[in-house]
Image 1 (cartoon, rainbow, N blue to C red):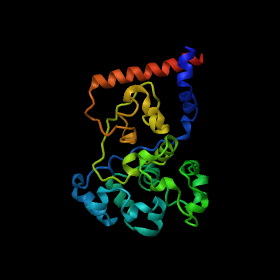
Image 2: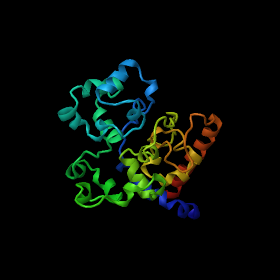
Image 3: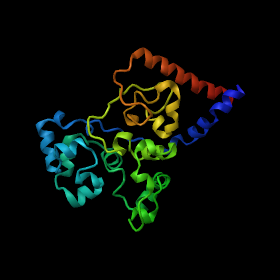
Image 4: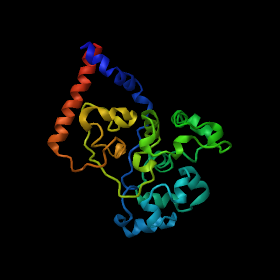
Length: 248
């Protein structure tokens, strides 16, 4: 048992930081292809100056360079109504937009500090000066997701950059099942530490949309078989139980 403890000690340290990551729902309604939008939704998108190209490549439309607050107060008169038609409805709309769409890029550095977001950007190499563009941006900003360290990938995921979004890929994105791993409290368990990709034979991330594409050699998987998922889940849960008994 001591061997098992030594082998998995790093995961205990990762679990200690479990509560530090955000839990903002993945907006599947935004990450669907333009061709799947209704006429009403296309008109709403057009009022925000999206076209087919910018809709299908998240992060390229001017509206997405701004936070929810900036859009409401300064830019688009129809923003609230248009985003509601597109699916941004309810109390979490601001958080969903600012994380998954804007990635807090429109926040001032002081706002990142106030909202406990700054630590993730510091891990990615940002400082107050580089954020304000008084010195060059950090090296991480010109790297592909796979070139980032595990720690940097985890920080990127914390501000809602999956591999697809970080690398600026175009839709369609892979869309994983909403099925959850019963012994894990959050579907985004892996996104809270990317090195967990190595555990559970995929059970932690094959079925979570907010980690889609972010684990090495993983791209999609609505097609994963039930039997494979069941076996992977059993392995994953057994791993967690081993940790529990080792601690006791």
